[in-house]
Image (cartoon, rainbow, N blue to C red; front, side):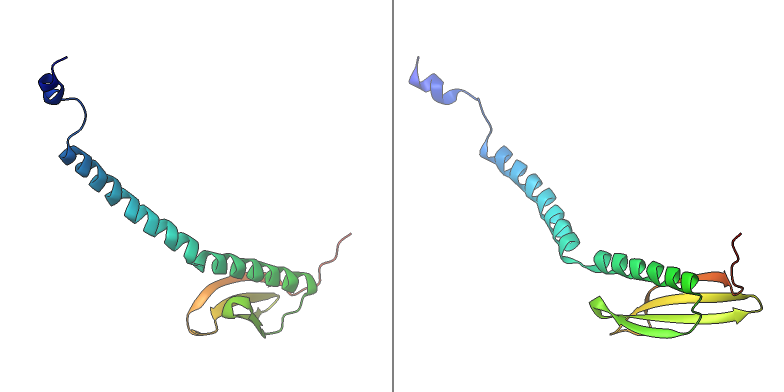
Length: 123
């Protein structure tokens, strides 16, 4: 085997091809890592899930106990639960609003339901 022919062989990648491949890989990995980091560090999904569970629980409690009184209650995650009732003849509209304690005018979520104010009789 001639040493000169060994060096003239064109097997493998050049440094330019390797650098281009690295730049492409990094250009994909950096936004992916930033997005994944934001998903894990941002707790808004946890807060929304918690608020929805509390609102549904509160609505079930109102419907079960027929407690149509207004109420404000402080929760975890610096949230405030507000229950508002609006009577209309034989129906009562119950609105459950969960707001941030820091931004009281901006609700995190609101659910409402019309409930009959007549007692339910089961036979």
